[in-house]
Length: 466
Image 1: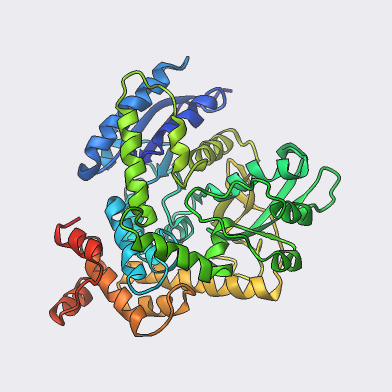
Image 2 (image 1 turned 45 degrees about the vertical axis):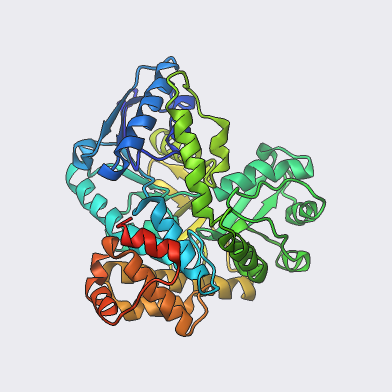
């Protein structure tokens, strides 16, 4: 018996990633018969939504399939009777990211989208919004699956489970996809010959690899890292090599974002170098330029396919992972995909009810996490510290508890505890006042006491209401 056609809603539909999402759905149409796609955005994103929406329709029109792309600023209109909801929005747009980066850098701390102070503040802005989306879903599409790739994906997905009380949610990241696409060739293998096992947190996981005969080949790939072979590092991460002896000892391959922890000194120096060079700027400022170029391409009425320039953004493969996840749920395919889901004992070093990023089989009941087992003391220590930091951030995002947020900053390895840390915390609160109503009383107190933003660019953006 054939299943009913699918309605998909994408919140943050004006994103530059949307053409990759369309490409993934077109590729899988035979196993995921889409009836309609709704792209949703906010008033500030209306122009981009219209540009990318027209391109998305051109992509479908160039395919053999009759699919209508709807554009709307009314989220509730779109969500009615949806089967799948994907989220790829950015609260505060790229200007918020630039402030997340520049304010910490102005005090000599890491400014990065999902790590350190910036990552925590992105979660503070995003979690209340995702929870409001969940409330709409409970009313308008109570049987839908929520597939989240809004960063920081792990914390946002966990907040949906913990505070939204919504279990039909899966979080996604492009980093494991990149590893599985690029690593096999370094040891003369193809992906279908290898078995991957991932465990950890979003942007903080490790993995092991086995060949078709069950022999572990993790160390073979580690050796290949130091032979100059392309390991597919995401475009947004500066390529500083890990310490080989460390990787061989742990016998696991860390994700690219571990550079911010294992090579913190060098990664911070590189970030500060870009921050201090007005011709380069922080990653967010660089992405702003790339986005401008992409949307100029998207305006071309003859463009009906994803342009190569999209790979310059740090999130290549995000959307394809989302499409495969949706197809796997719809068709009960039991595909192996690395997702953020409830732990349920797959990583026994963490509570069973917390969110982890692990290899899973994806089917009609969602993610079935594959047991990884306990980690060695070094990795276990990192993991437990990072998870508890995340839990503090998530609760602070919901409650507006300033003291709890300070605890998260003290726990986070990228925000060195002390007065500078407090300065960064306070300035970020003021910079993002528009999107942090849960901290309104504290922000008013800080402003009354004369706290101002040190970085000129971040201060100017804030004064302009951006």
